[in-house]
Image (spheres, rainbow, N blue to C red):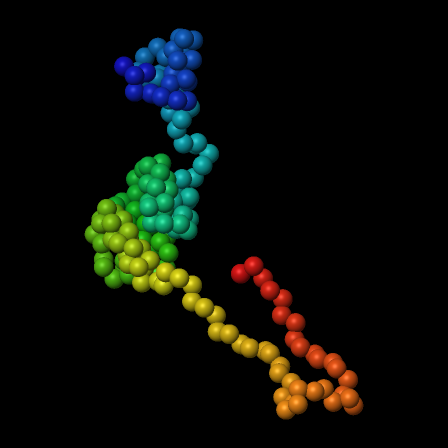
Length: 164
C-alpha cells in the first residue's frame, strides 16, 4: 500500500529497499524513510527558522517558513507567530503589528493582503528623472556670420548615453 502513494525518487528508493529485503516491518520502514528523506540531524532548524527573512513575496516566505517550522518541534504558537511577523519585510511587518493577529493563519492572510495593498499603492511606471539641460548656446549673430577674428572652438559638455 505504501508504494501506491509514492512517486519519483521516493518510489525508486522504496523499490530498491523492498527488493533488497531491507524493509521488514513498519518501524524499520519509517526509520529508513526518515533517515533517507528526513531533515539532517546536523542542521539546527530552529536557528534557521529564527534567522529566516522575507526577501521575495509573502507566499514564497510562507513556503520557506512552513518548511522550516515542520522541522522544529516544541515551539509555542505565540513563538511561531512572533517569529513569522518579525521576519517579514519592514513595510509589511509594521502594518501587520498594528492589526495584532491572534494566529499564524490570520497573520499569513493579513500579510498577503498588506503586500497586495502596498503593490497597488506603488506607481506602475517608473517616474521620469528630472531633466537638467546642459546645452550651451553661443550668442546669436544677426547676420549668421562668424567673425573672422574669433577661432571656432566650442567646449560643449560630452554626455555619454546609456541603453537606459
